[in-house]
Length: 181
Image 1 (cartoon, rainbow, N blue to C red):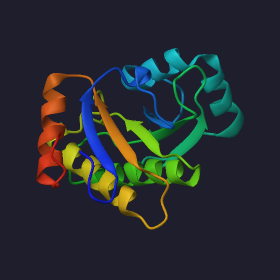
Image 2 (cartoon, rainbow, N blue to C red):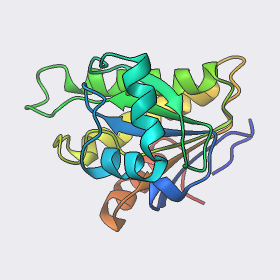
Image 3 (cartoon, one colour):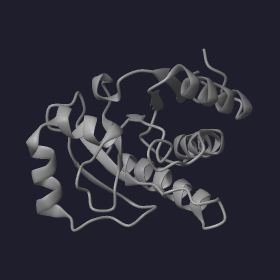
Image 4 (cartoon, rainbow, N blue to C red):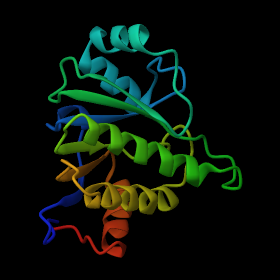
């Protein structure tokens, strides 16, 4: 949904590797080593240059932070590798670390002049973070990033893998005053 300020936060059911944007957020691991799920799909679609850039530029990434590379063969300029937390029980700083991962990813996108960003639901796959808890955090960070003074960000799209995940994000958008269009 586009708001009066011209910014958009939306959720779609899509293969994130096919969505054109200035930046694609990757749900990365601390070793930046590729893996399964979204991380593996992004690495396969981007091609070997993605891993080469990560190895050349970085020695891992702490949970709650993010790093940036080129996008290889993806329909984007950048990939932002955000490391979300593994869910334990919610009492070990997981929500704060997830919030930080999104905040850092969106900040890197803005610092690199991106107007459009596509993001997965970080940490809700193999890392086990409950999506009903994660979605409102993701949406709140997107809304905050779009509202920042002087930001080039205009649109943040959450690309979800399943209809069930999409429904949770649509609910979170509605609760944040950004109903799906």
